[in-house]
Image (cartoon, one colour):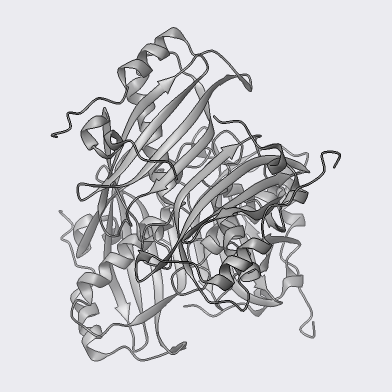
Length: 146
Length: 146
Length: 146
Length: 146
């Protein structure tokens, strides 16, 4: 377990936030949000992110190459969560999306997704306009006092 | 396909309403809410219903004996839904919960669930207090003009 | 709860059978197969059914209008299930698919699905060739002694 | 994206293998196995692993601290998958479970899970007997020629 970038625990560091309701079916037998089902919350925010970051831009097809989910605190039902999303870095063909899951003001989980742009089933360069879109959605520096 | 009780299409007929967010994972390949995944929305409202109807009453364990889901209109993501829940009827050991799924003010689906009360793995009489709790949550008559 | 057609409890009555593995995520907090998740087993067999019944025939798009799931016995994990599928009846634009879920030789559940054929988003007549395909997949009479 | 340990791509390197059927609901709109739903296949094999590795040993409660899923090839439905599971390393309170997902003989994905042993909601030392159980399930060296 690598150490955690403290910036990632702050809701204000992420340019986009989405509020979702948890479901009783998200829980496992222990009465807490299940490690895998939480993935659908991140996935939903990821899909919504594109509508904002790439609005009016060329439509790309990115595939998930790697998904890393960290569980910091046990989440609960019933209750809403906020899924915060931003871009950590990007190269010519891929980018790293970073997300935080917040409940009652606390960060309960993190998700890092490596996405690869594809065309006709192969990795392909990201269009310039989309790179600019990703740049606008970078994770922000939040002063330590916040 | 039996005919539909028009009362069931009115949000005001149900004593309890719960707002949930749809998820991109609820959709199937056609871009509409999937017939099975919709079941988790009804299930969530069913679990929340108990907290209201049976608050302070004996804790019972009811199992699903039958589930009938009707699709009236295609639902969409992103978007919220309202899941409305009430009781249609009950006997000594079982009861019928009825639900409506509403999106943008329209009823897009119905769910009827037959639940059987159990104790030690067998059907068992419902406690009087819980029967009274179910009675208070009956579907309401809504004037035709509404 | 209507009475059950005893024919439906016999694996041999269904023209098509499919073996699937249950998953730990299919269980709910009670340690039994969850009422909604079981729906994905029926859904999988439904999708596979088309590959057999309509092989080489015009491709149609049917949507689920109604889904009725009955739970006869509690299912368990780990373990395989057999999902048996057949056609109960059909009209010009719709048909009723019936399924049985079997575990360790016992019928643990039933599913009846009303499907409506559509074209361009509206109900549409089923092609003659597909009607013949459905006819070949009707539920079979099994002698009482079996 | 870090480089991949080639040992991880060999089915024979893992001490335990489990065969599961994919479901039509595992696919996303692109017709391939969905990145999140694949998680339930790994989860299932993880649950089954305990029955073998810890058979007759003290029952422990481990929670997922981190989950890293890598997608190497697109998986398909219908079709079986083999989920192979082993232990990469362990310390006093936690261990790293590693898994490979194979379809038609090819490794299509990898999963690394960091699990923390808990007692009364806090991290707790693993019993000696369970450490020995983990030792027996270590990933194996497979000669390069295999």
